[in-house]
Amino acid sequence: MIEIGNAQLWVHDQDEAIAFYTEKVGFEVRADVTMDEWGFRWVNVGPAGGVGAGLVLMPVPGPPMLDEQSSAQLSELVAKGGGG
Image (cartoon, rainbow, N blue to C red; front, side, top):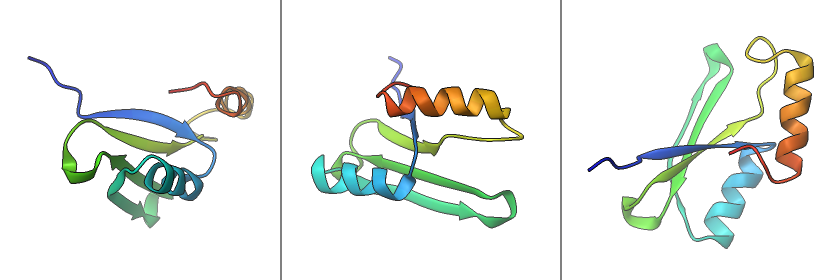
């Protein structure tokens, strides 16, 4: 049997997303790691007790990962509730 460990979800603000998932949904923070040298933050939330798949809360990327236009398009999709 194949199990999904994590699913990625694009967000505009990781702190705001953490607050929503922990305070409203009842999830716990499983990982919150900042890699300063890469300007990257890995945030993983999931059901309490570590049971079940987690959500990786990823900020909408800009250059060099995405060009300006693609980043703006993804940001618009996220604002509409899309982009998982």
